[in-house]
Image 1: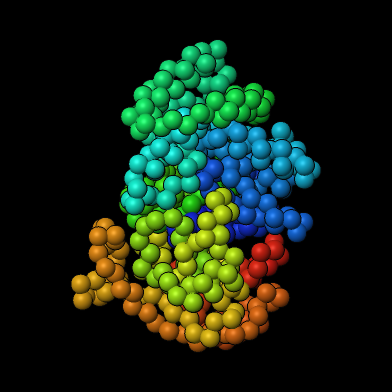
Image 2: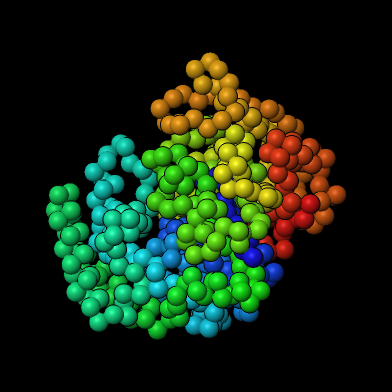
Length: 420
């Protein structure tokens, strides 16, 4: 069977730590979509580690980790990460596998990403400029190069052909930047990738399933950034929801059992796009500073606001979420009053559904207020010991979402998770 862990907001929900926490109960951890724009932060032996391409189960020696075909792979980033985890004593050559169908991010994809974003002016999407969007465009346009292609003697010819196509596009953008250093680094990284375990990913996963192994599928970004169901066009380029597990790993829908959704106790967003509960005041600044809300990939300050249950219930519905993990609950320790968005007021009317195009309308969040617990919870290990105000807050979420909060993260450490 396959269990899924994914984010229910706009990413940055703390998936890395949660996957790392659950990985001990699984045999295989699999990334099913996204690229190096996703930074999953873990704390291993009190050291902060940010993984962008390698699955978050890599620090569990007995677990297999696979990068699925739904991912777009930057060989340079992968090489750098492998070297970093090797320095921490991890034998990645033994337990890291890459699907041969995984698409490659080329240097010209990064250039196209940058050129396209610069051309948008004030209408920027907020891309991380990692080349993810152009790589997925080549995938759907049937032009992309895949990991399996680097083992073929015709790879260089294929690369030059695609590079020339990209160069014509870059010329249209009048992009003048020299990317020769990027290319040199890229081909050095390809030599490294050729030495790794490149496998037929869908057979790999299904053989593990047939042997009774437990698979944990790890999502990147968040459900509200899904290319189909997110706040389009301010979305990522892949399917971030549970349906993406099937297409990203090559497993049948009936193989999926539990869908574990992750939400912060509040809400954040990086980059452009609608954010109904965003706080542009001292409270927002306090959330950002208390939660250290700065992008693990870009370092950009995250936009902060109260938890949005309208968006959260929508994400739970499209994912088929069976249980919730609430992260960063301890960040709310110092807030005397907490707000929870229960509906939107649009054109004078209340609604509890996500509009078609959120950025075309003025959305006023309708809040229900709760007293804060004003008590540090980072050393608490038992649900019964939590402040009564916090239990009330969580109980309301359970009832509104019709999905239970089963785990509460009350700090960055591996051991700082409370089972409800």
